[in-house]
Each structure stands twice: as structure tokens, then as C-alpha cells.
Length: 274
Picture 1 (cartoon, one colour):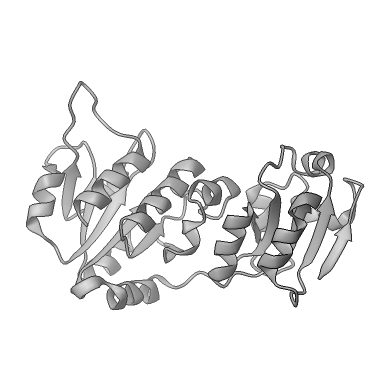
Picture 2: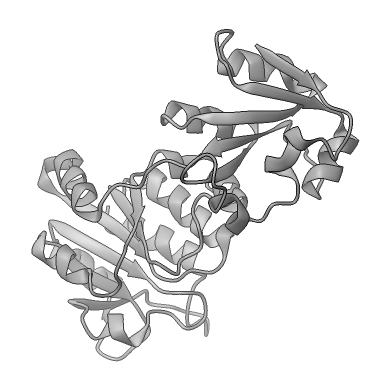
């Protein structure tokens, strides 16, 4: 094991963790493709089990044994051991979960390949995928991924402007399920809706707009391949997407409430269409 004890927050070995924003991590030139931060032993374990490779791990002394066991005695990953004060000085927040790992970003699959894999793994030829359109809140992205994992969604697609599923908060809220649900970032949206339609998916957008059927009615239609679009917080699905949807769908509300938080709406929709 490569244990390195660091007491100076300015030590260059801590550069990956020193108040770097998610954008800065993605733009790291070495390694190619950039980095993301995984927080807590459980999340790091799920990332490793998904085939992701850690560049280093930042850990407090009391967590060293568990992290060493997780990585394996033959691992060549650098383990940087710091005090609680140094960890907080470097990251800008109290690290309560014991460890942070700077992980190499995986190469994202092509949309066509992801759809093909989703169809192959689908139960009895049925397939459901989710599209997160321009979500800005990382907690909502993480929550949607956790719902997708729990309720059997075959894949998640995120649009070019959607918040990053590998952002630290997204990963934490998802409890690491972002590593187990196949996903990729769509290159062209909403133009790539045509690829979904060509693959046999009925594209249904969750909306309060005119002409929407209820979620119950969508379920009764019993589509074998269903792509569910969830729009950004506040404004919902963009007009260009709305114009090319095959179905517009709403969740019936009571009590004077007109809509749900997008993560909550995804849970309801995933469960109803399971």
C-alpha cells in the first residue's frame, strides 16, 4: 500500500482535492478525461465495483484500515492520510464520511450503443429509459438516479446542459447508484429524440401542458419501449422538445398542488410504469 502522511494543506499532492469545482475537475488535462470526486467508503466501493479507477484517496487516520481493505493490499493507489483539520482546510468543508477519492472519469458510451444494451438487458423485451433535460440541481440528478436504480429503469440519458451525474453531491445523493445504472450524455437534444423513436421508443414527456394524458392512462397504453422525459426545475420541458413528444403526461394532483419536485416525480413515474 502507498500510504503518504501529509500535514500541510498546501502540499501539491492534495491538488486534486483543493477547492476544485466540478468544472475544474472535468478539465484536468492529466488524466485524459478529467476526474470526479467520490465521497465515503460505500460510494468509493461502488465506483470501483463498476470498474472505475481511483487516482488517489484522501483519508483520515481512523479510516485507513477500512480503505486499505477496500482497495486491496496489492493496489498501487496512493492513499493520502491527513488530519480532520487538514481535510477541511483543503476541501473547504468538514469531511465527515472518512474518505474522498479522486476517480478517473470513465469514457461515456455512445447513445446507439446504450440503447442497444438497454434493449438486450430489458426484461421480456420491455424497456424503460429516463431522460433528464437540463436539470440544474445536482441533488435532483442524484435522486433521479437512485430512483432509477431502485425501480428498474434500464438507462438514463442526460441532455447537454443537464447537471453532471458525477458531481460530488449528485454521487452522494444517489448513494453511488449512478455507477450501476447505465447512462450517457446526449450530444444533440432534442434532435436525438429521432434516434429514440427509430429504436422503437415511445417518447413521453412529463408536463402540465395542454393535451396531456394522465400517468394512469399512459400505463394502460402498456408500451413495450418507453422513454420518459423530465424537464428542468421550474420551467419544465423546453418547447422544442414538447413539439416532438409522442405523449404528454401529467401526474394527477390534489390539495391545490400543481406539480412535484422533479426527483419525486421521477419516483412516482418509475413506479407506476414498472
